[in-house]
Image (cartoon, rainbow, N blue to C red; front, side, top):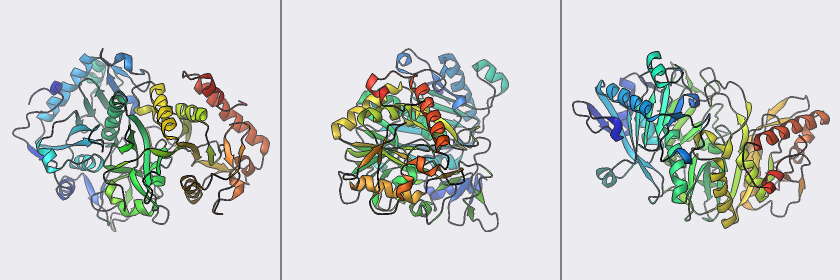
Length: 533
C-alpha cells in the first residue's frame, strides 16, 4: 500500500473493499461483525465504547508555514509538528495494511455545488461507513464515477496509540489521537469509536476553507417557511441547546440541523443528514425526530431491552450524550436540495445554567456581535469527555471547538450578512429558570416553540419591549397567542428571593466581562454587554 502522505489510500488490492455500499449491506455487515444490534424499529444500535463524545484534548492540528498565521493557536487548536504528523501517517498506513476488509465512502460536504468539498472516508467499521453515508452528501452515480476527494479521513478506531508512541509524538498517553492537516487535507483518528469526530473534522475543514471563498460557515440549524421562501431562520447554538429540535418544526421545512454556509446566494447545508441528541426523546414532544428513527438510522449509546429490542430514551446510564443519525430527508417536507434564501431571522440558543437569562430577547446590532463573540451557554453532560453535569461555558461564535481561525473573522462575517439582508437577531434561553421553592427548572419546550413561532411569524413586531437592567436585553412584554405565561418572560419574577437573583445575575454578568477581555472588539460592541458585575 502506498504512503498516506499523498492524503489518500491508493492501493487497496488484495482487500475486500465496500465502496459506497448500500444501507442494507452496511447494516448486514455491522450485525454480522458484531458491531451493533437491531432495535424493534429497524434502527442499528451501536456503542462507541470508552469515548462517548468528542475528545478535544486529544486533537491536534499540523502546524505548517502556509496556515500558521491564519490559525488561532491555543487549547482548541493544538499544534503538531509535521514530522509527528508523518509518524501518524505511517502508523495509519501500516494499520490499514493489516486489515482484510475496508469500508470506503466517497461523497460531499456542502449542498451548494459551487462551494462543496469532496470527502473520502476510509473506515474499518461498517457502521462508521453507514454514519458517513447518512451524514455527508451522497454523490449521484455519474458523480461517483468522476469522484476525486478534496479531503481524506482515515479512521483507525481500533488502533490505540501506545505509551511509547505517545512519548514519541509528545502527547499525553490516552490511547486516542485525532490529528488533522489543513495542508494535506487529511484527518487521522486513532483509538476512538465516536463517529462524531469524522463529522466535526469536516466541519473544521469548512470553517477554514469557506471564509476565503466568501462564505460564512456557521454552527447552526436552518429551516424555511413552507409558503414563503424568503422566510429563512438560523438557529445557532452548541450541542444540546436545541438546534436540531427547534429546526425540526412541522410548520416549516428543514434545511439542516447543525452546519451551514451563508454565501452571496443564500444559505446552504454542509451535510446530508442530522445528528440529534435523543436523551428523554418522546414521540409527543419531538414527533419528527421520533419518526426519523427507523431503518437507515444509527442510534449511539442508547439503552435497549435485549429481549424486546425497545429503546429506553430516558435511561442515561451509558451517557447523557445519546445520539441518532438519519438522512435529512427522513424529516417530512425537508428542503431538497438543502439550500435556501438569505436568513430573515438569526436566533442564538443558550442553555443558561444560572437561571437568570430571559427566555427570549431581541438584540441590537452591537449586542448581536457581543453575544456571538462570547457564545455563552452551558456545556451539557456527555457532550465532551469528563462533562457529567451542566457547566457555565463560553464558546466563541457558539462553536469555538470547530474554529481554526480567530473568532473576529467569523463575527465580521455575521455582521456583514445580517446587515446586508436586514436580518433580526434574537437570544433564546432554552436552559433553566427559577421556581417558587428556589430550585431551577428547564423551560418547557412548548413555550420555546411558541416564542420562536412568534419571532418567525412577525407577531412580535407590534409588541412593546422593556429593558433588562443588568443584561441590557430587550424583553417582550408578552407573546401573542396566550401559550406563553407572561410572568416567565422576566426571569427575576420566577425567583422567590429577588436579592439572590440580582446576585446570581451580576455573577454571570461578571463572567461575561471577564470573558470578553479575551477578544478584540469595537468599544460600542463591548459596551453592549451586561453591566453590574
